[in-house]
View (cartoon, one colour):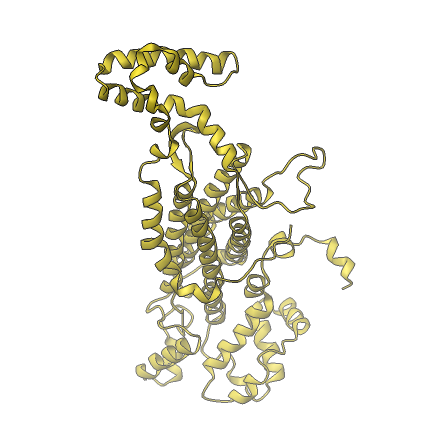
Length: 471
């Protein structure tokens, strides 16, 4: 097929546009079918092994496609193709096995290897964001509840809210990966009947075969019971951890987009990057928007394995197959590009302290009313009288802001009112933003020390990898 013909058919943008080479290869036909051959080699380890091993990778894809057209069965097509180049071993290829021996076991290998690609990427995102949190641990900023200005927090403390979610995702992905077992050698309905017959009723030999193949494939354990397939709840567990991570990333990147609108924080922006074809001044948060867009897809993919697991009749039904060919690779491919993009964002986040300070000045007078009242009471005034004075002045200042579009002049009103004369000498210290952030800096320090850094320890060797992000 000529290269130009590739543009005449749909290509998944997850592969053609976004995902890393490592993750794209992990779910490729090459990886899938060479793994099938490895599994047949493991099964036949005791005989004809040299011939089979020498032909592990030289797959004739054209022959396999032609065989599948004739046989209408993908596994048997590859059995015949493998047998063609291994005539001596041909009689024992796939002996005693069902299609799910290669299909399901290969899927489990791909899931495990997929997690091994994602975990270091997630660790790097956490590492970059933890450095950001540490740098801005004590920079006061407006906190928001209901997207309305609330008490102050710090830029670093807010980043720790993002980090806490990602730390949970790290633990979830690691657990899902570590919980994976091998389907092993179980036969057509999971009873191992064909292998018991092959070994003439010797149960120990069947168990030894199952254990040996499991170990060859790099797994510590196999599922003790299966139907024809491993339980599709395993897929739910894996995709659930990815979808949960997708929700975390969507929240983080939505926050970044909101802050970009306020001009407090921006994602990286290349020197020659164009924000808008129509509006040259714009710096759109397109990386964060891409993350949100793909995260939405990742979250939605969870419904596939949930529904598939719920309709697997008895020992199995084939209505899982077409769905899993799409939903499992797409979950990992989507998670892969989300993490690559988020690493790029967190490596280059830009903070504008002067803009943040200006926003604080606009809102702080209202937030400072309680501090002013406390200071007046310490100076000997009545709390209720002071509260009423502040209430009246606050309403007047709010009218200037909302009805006239003016600046918040509450402090000027306080300074002009003789009632507040006792505290005017130290009003600046009462209104210092750093007196409004509570223990945010201390919380950042402790959180990074106790919860984040230990989580990153196993991934130290992978921390310096940079992401070349294709825009």
